[in-house]
Length: 122
Image (cartoon, rainbow, N blue to C red; front, side):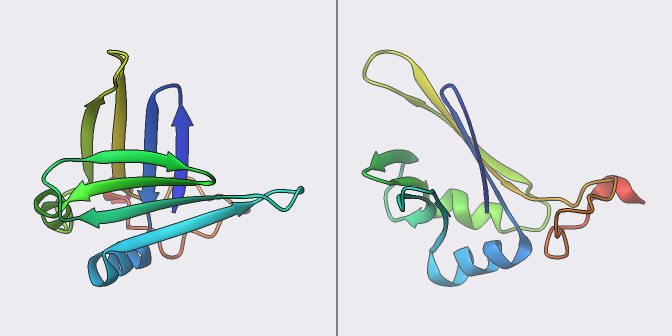
């Protein structure tokens, strides 16, 4: 799973295997380790709640999606889920969860064997 954070935006991109894991176990996580032995874990969780949420505790970011949205996203024709969450200060946090497509140009340093086929590659 890839994460991209820019200002008030969190974007998660999942491979085919990660989408399958999310469907079967209701959670998928990835961890990045740092030189000082600290880690950052980010997780996508299928929530029983009716609304999206995103929280950060200690060294973990959790993005939670409602079951109804998660179920729709599993359909092969659905690429992403997106939600704008209102913050207490009036700002918004944009959540975007996408299926990770293979790039159109080969990346020699990146394994894309589990990515979804790019629809533009035909």
